[in-house]
Length: 358
Image (cartoon, rainbow, N blue to C red; front, side, top):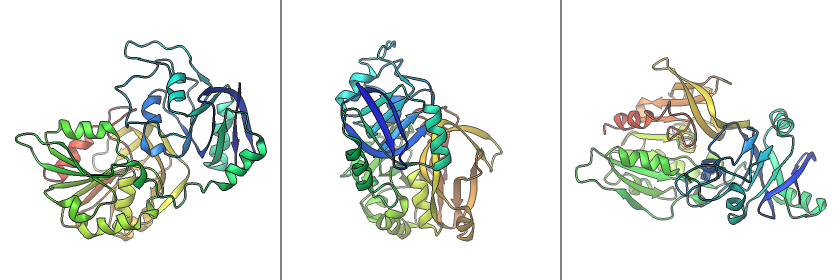
């Protein structure tokens, strides 16, 4: 059966249906990683997005129960040049096609993904609809017109935990970390658990009093959506500025930027992949990082607010990390848990803990 990806500007790409039969709307974005598709699909930061993989072959090693970064697939749709129906890995328990069907995620293969990605780079990330069930074109355009897009979307409150829980409480913890969950990935929690700390996870809809109770360090997680659409969260962060050290990644980084007085803006097509070079301006070291975000902290307003840029994205010069010593804040835009991605930045978790005196 055929499949189609229709973009809001009217351009369409037709190919072969894969995964579930259905029609889903989302923001069309691309990821340049060559591996890690299961981690990408299950990253809550991809909520309501249709992910295009730039690597040619996807699905070669199947899927397994160990690699998911959450308990479900969050991507609305999946697109690649070629999805493999056959797979080979001692860890695999099923193929990608069956996995997508079970997750009710439609996918399309056999299209010119190079042309598609060039189009997104030129025009920017845009609304799209992927359909594998023969829905007529006029209905697809109606769905596109009705979908609100990503600007101003409050999605982090939908994907994170709804109640607080203790992840780990060792007999003699080195410190106490409070995690604010706006869509946290499992490997971040694994790294925090391995650090020997007591780790408590709270919903992003909570209060500063809840987050800071019995904590030495507050850790704001990654997550989807527009950070500026979370004024209540920003207010809670501002209530604690300077009282406890706070660190953050991705969405947490953006929220901390807004809380200290900077502004955020939407990137033309975002940073998504496992090959993004970032320079640590404090050490001079360049790391290849895993990234997944569509919004960025504005440098001019960050500096005006007293912040210091600590990391810079070397492809486009954008802010990839900052500190604000007066507010006891440190954050980065990239993903130190590296799932998927290179492990250059995994030591950043320890750096976060040391920043919090843990």
